Length: 288
Image (tube, rainbow, N blue to C red; front, side, top):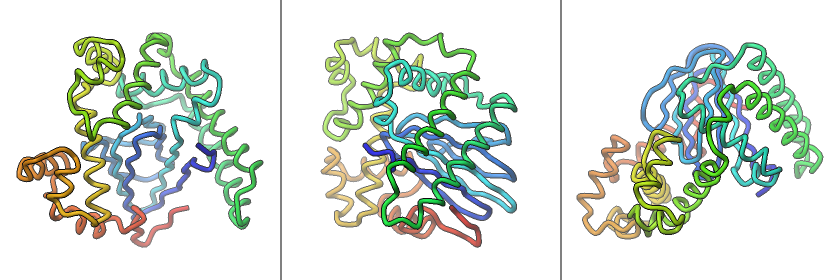
């Protein structure tokens, strides 16, 4: 995992943006204007002074309006794990706490500091964009700024000690197992055995930390894989259903439509119509 896997975007007015990555943490905040934000197909308000901190597998859709600017920052879980264990645990606690509280306001001082640090990241990114390859020192600078942002958020969080380190480690392990096995293994018992827990205890941990059970995350991962295969367009709907372990195409179609609102036969067409191949469709706006 490289530091150039950091994704930093400034999304301006009249833009549509979608993102789904199963091994990344994401930060989203509004600098100005108005945005329609959907997380896991549910609409949420995003106001100035709020920072959404999203765990892996979050499905993100945004549409910005006139005179708007949203900052999107994504980075791999593995990058955090390369730092000290204490730092990695604090980061996971931070994201889990915000997921639990469903409250995204940070203090005005911290919010302005994070805005300033992100501007420094954009400046560093711009200074390196004319190189054939981003210099290693620029990557280190970007990661340093990101670490400071995370440390500021950790310090601002008043509830980070409520979650045990053991359960944070378990949460990271659960997401790793889901990413690796969800297509082949769809029963909770399989993951519980891998973690030396009962199925009941595994669901209790997930429910207490994220508000969702394992079945939800398994279904979410299957939806992500189905979308990727549909977008590639190399397999028929029947072949995709079979590859994901569904022998009944009709059931698979109902399953996908329930989560996305679009039948699988129409998904690719709608995807490119709304988002284009690079996932970002610019309608008179600018994305840095």
